[in-house]
Length: 76
Image (cartoon, rainbow, N blue to C red; front, top):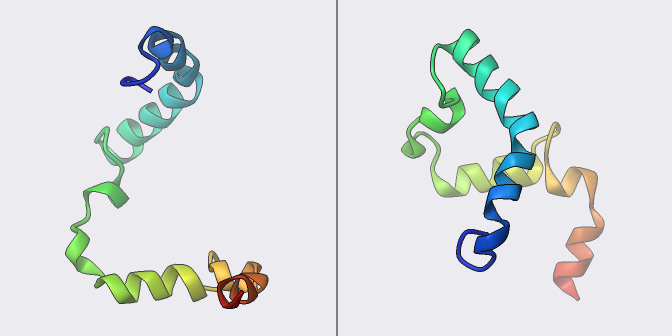
């Protein structure tokens, strides 16, 4: 956005304020930091393959659990 649509950047940032202000207020009050905990955890905690498996097969957020048709699209 900042590189290709420079003249629209200010309006874009103003439209994000209604979502950003409550989010950062909540994280500041609850976690005493502006950066959420899931962004502060080290990335080495989960190896790449375990993380990919977690996102693909997890019952709560797995891509293959909610859209098994994806397997056929890969085969095609």
